[in-house]
Amino acid sequence: MSPLVAYLLSLADDRLILGHRLSEWCGHAPILEEDIALANIALDCIGQSALLYGIAAEAEGNVRTADQLVYFREGVEYRNLLLVEQTNGDFARTIVRQFLYDAFGILLFERLQRSTHAPLAAVAQKAYKELKYHFRHSSHWVVRLGDGTEESISRTQRAVNDLWRYTDEMFGAGFPEAELITSGTAVDPQLLRQEWRTSVEGIFAQTSLTIPDANTVMLTGGRTGRHTENLGHLLAEMQIVARSYPEIAW
Image 1: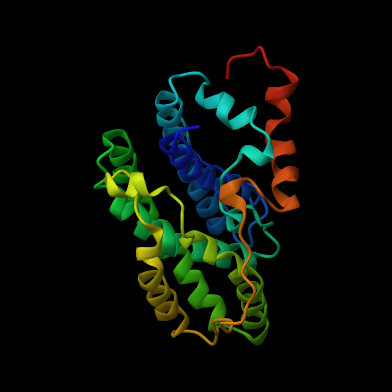
Image 2 (image 1 turned 180 degrees about the vertical axis):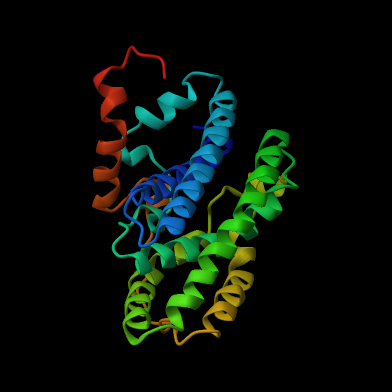
């Protein structure tokens, strides 16, 4: 697999898996407005992933279709961040997961609009507009929950403590490959780390939440196909119909 295809798949996988997780809230959110909001964000994420899979399929030489890249890859072939595959848990956990990714995603896609790979830049322009809303939505809820009742603060802090260990992978050294960064196709995620941290701290400053200490053990592996058991369960549910009827065109 070429570095370009691997990079495009990582972007697409992040958006697909996060969108699928959010879709699990449909009909179960705490209030009607939030049910609609999470469903819309899920649709945005999945729509962005569809465009990225299309570009990846083309970059691969159309050996596989976008649908085949989604429904007929095994878990070890997925390149999404471990963060986005984590289970929803309660509403606070879902919001914290979304916020930690959104604070990164908005920085990444803002810069990808200037990618020298024209199809990727075009998708980034669309995605960035949607990510601005996603970040505003998740950060609003972090403030609301993190500056709310004793119960909401406790649940939100628990989510932060648990999910923080997956954030370092967003800035992992060595991915994407240096040639993609040098050519201007990809963004060096390490350059986003401080701005992401500043953004997160700015939102947390409006709450009673605290960032876990620097000794937190960080977990990685998603970018190289080493996932938690959560992804396997998600893919089994997501892929079952396509795999049961592989001859059908979706």
